Length: 115
Image (cartoon, rainbow, N blue to C red; front, side, top):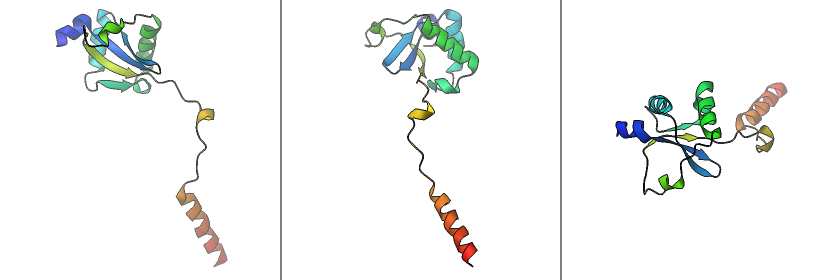
């Protein structure tokens, strides 16, 4: 299995429009095997800056593998999966609700003032 991954392994990148399969070079496959040695799925955010740039460069070079790999017919071994989610901006997040402890501290302080 390791030889097959070194020979023709692909990286699965989860995108908002679905999974994409990227064909890395031989040296990139060696590095990616080491990268995915403990976890088969890694979020893009946990990668180092160098690793993020490598994944982004592989995706921007448009070296995507055809969809034949995704239907299981001529399936290439998957080295690992990168969860490549777009960053969520703060203006799109719902407003925060106050914590329950914040309200109870206010009551305790009010009781202390009255005593």
